[in-house]
Image (tube, rainbow, N blue to C red):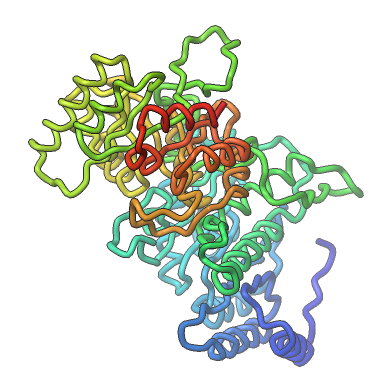
Length: 516
C-alpha cells in the first residue's frame, strides 16, 4: 500500500443513495472505512436501507471486513475511524471478518492459540456484531512479538484455520444444534498453500461471503421451494463462509506473480473441487491425519486397485421402521445393506430389543444393518454401522459416541442438506455421506427443500472421489434412481419404492439394475 485516499463524505452519500434506489441490495460488503466521517455515513446508510424492508421480508445481509491493517502488517486507519466503525457499523453487521492482526487491534492483545482466538471471538461479539469470522490466512505462528510457537500448535501450521462464532440461535426450530451452528463456535480448515501470491485474499473472502449470502437471499425470495435448489436456498452465514473459503483457497492455489509485490488471488468459479472445500474440525490442534476415519467403504462402481478389501456399499439402501420389515428385506436376493429407522419410540429397552432382533436377522442373511440415530443400541447389538442426522451427530459427538463407534470399528453415514453440513460431515471422516431430499418426500418432515439433480452433481464434485454419495428423498422408482445415478450418486436410500411395492423382490431388483 503506497497511499490511502478517503473520498468526500458527500460523494459517498450520493453514491450509496443512488445505488439503493436503483439496485436495492440483497447483501452489502463493506471494506476499509478510512475516516470517522465515512464510518458514520455508512452506519446511517445501513440503518436507512434496513428500515425500508417490509414485514416478512429478509433484510440485506451486511458483511464488514474491518480493513485496518494490510496483509503486510501496515496500519491503514486511525483510532478515531476505528472507534466510529465500532460505534456506528458493528451493530448493523451480520458478520465481521477480521484477519489475525485486525482482530488483535480490535481486542488490544495478541492471539497466539486457538483458545485465544475463541475467547477473542466472544469479545468481538460483545462489541455488537451478530457473528465473527476470524480469518486464518495468518497462522498462529505469526506474531509481532518474539513469542515462541507452543509445541501443541505445530499441527496448525499446515492449515488455514478460520474461526466462526455467532450470537444467532441454531437453525433448528427446536433449538437442536448441528456441528456447523455458529453458536457452538466452528473451526473451518483448509490446506495452506505455500504461496506469496495472496494479494486481496481478505477482500475476496468477504466479497465472496456477501455474494453467497445474496444468492441464498435471492433463492428464498424469488425461487420456488420446490424448484430443486435446496442447498442454495439454505445458504446462511456459516454456509457462505464455507463457500467463500473454498473460493479463496482455489484462488490462492492458482495465484500468479504480477508486478513487484505479492501477486493477486485468482478469481475462479463457484466451488467445484474437494481439494479446496473446507472441513469443519472438532479439534483444530489435531492434524487431519490424526483424526481417525470411520470404516472406509468402497463404491459399488469402483474397481479395487489399492489392495484394500474395503466393504462395498450396496447400490440401494432400503430404510424401514420395524424388525419385521428388516427380516423381510434381508431375504431379498442381492440385498447388502438395510437401514432401520425406528419411529415414535423412546423406551431404550424396546429400542434395543428391536435393534437386536433386526441384527439377528441380518447376521443370518449376511446383510449389513445400519441403525438410524440410536447409536447406543447399535453399539450394544453389534451392528455394522450407524446413520446420523446432523443434530444426532452433534449429540453423539458431545457424549463421546464417536469414540465408541471408533472403538468398535463401526461404519458411519451422515446426512447433509446444506453446504455447512457438508463441511461438518467431511470433518468427521465418515464411511459415506448422504444428500437429501433430492425430490419432494412425504416420508419424513424435513427442514430443507428438495435439492434437485444439480445439487447431487455439485456434492459429487465437492466430495473426495473415494467417498460414497448416497441420495435420499422422493426416489420412488427405478427411473428416479437412474436419474440420481447419472447425476453422481453411488447409492440410493429408498423407502416407499420398496415398502409400497406390490412385488418387493422385483422392485428391489429394478432399483439395483437402475443403479448399474
